[in-house]
Image 1 (spheres, rainbow, N blue to C red):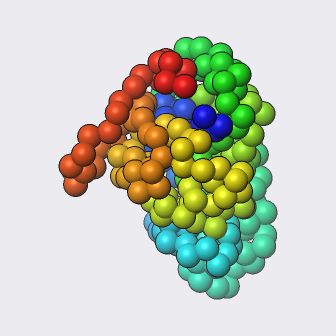
Image 2: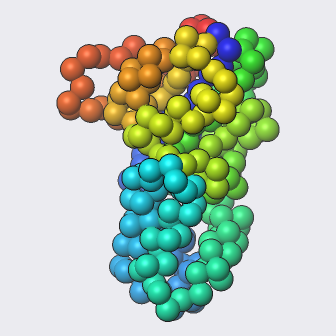
Length: 231
């Protein structure tokens, strides 16, 4: 085994996604309101950009897909200025969203350290709908040093997003990894498990599991604390 892939939200970082999103949009809009945004249309524009990232076809980065769509929602605004201010938010107030996550797993850093002693690469394959500094912040929310990982996906670099299997393929190709050299841990049957199955990756469900009612083949499940035992 050469590499371990970890999803972030609900896997490394325990969370109820609805609670997190409520806090996230509250803080984001509060920061951006002085720029003349109306709340409902602003939230819709962010969701439209997120949808564009999820549907991204690989011709642009997810970051470019987001801002192209967001700009179409607000053609009269200075998008370069808005983009810069989003960056300020992710470097400052975004830290407050930790209150909307669940407590980190006890000993999470030690578990990651033990995994690093067993494989060559430990990679976070978070859905790349956030910038790198927001990804790193949420890893810290999980009680883990972001420097523990060899690579963290982000919207600046990724050209696909979950549930597109090309998102994971892009990571595998980046590190010249074959399917039988990887084990993938995630909490979503659809966004993680189905993709792993399609790519013939060894996969375990863990964390705040999200079921897929259309899934007919159960996935192996494991507690976060027992992950090291599978390697």
